[in-house]
Image (cartoon, rainbow over all chains, first blue to last red; front, side, top):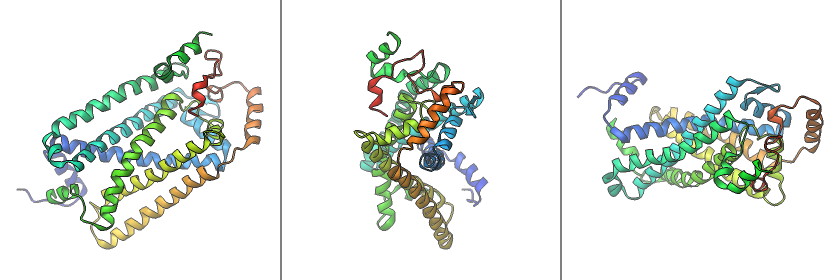
Length: 165
Length: 170
């Protein structure tokens, strides 16, 4: 057995070599997505605070998130933000679904450990089940005019009305 | 390390850590609905190009539904900050072992989280619609070249109708 060394790099190397399987990877992803969401949350509270502090700044920053600076659209910026938005969405969905898996382990540890592999794949399946339509909707809104695509799924009749009038 | 890693999975025996353990699970369950619902409304049904001051002020000051959305946002922001910063504290305390360093870490984290809680709660609770700003903005944008971000979704010639069912979700 090798001697465990302190230090960030050796910890990371040892950590990646540790053969924890699915549990290790979902643990790592849970942390990374959690930290990513927290970073976004801090920024998001600051930008939303502008709504009460300075409405014009709020509109400017929302325009910036939409890829606009002083009313001029920068397509690359717009795409970068919307792909980031997709990353945020994926992080929240994974963190939520995997968090539910963790709660199942706490409620019934013995049964959950018995079904460990199945539960991991259930998380992966549910993640893609949610993220595939989400990706479609976000990319569609990015490529086309901002279109109420979600309405086509939730309210088909309203969607038809928006086009046929 | 294996021992510490494993022992972290086990429910804490008591005190603050046990309370935090319960809090993470209960707030997590609430946030699954609040945060995912928020994402669906803001990023799928609406999107960043239709969200602006006009949108937020309508949403928060609507006489019928404004209180519901403010209550939603209030619950969400408080639970999310506490959940997030407690998670950050748990991660950092795996690296920071000295008692004195932990006191510094905890103090720093809760001061920062407290400041964000103040900002978030203040904005949601104290918001009042700035009608002058909206009026001036509308006057200015009617003269200028129309930019897509300034056109509320549904108002362009391609999608003329503001779909009534959407207004409920503002």
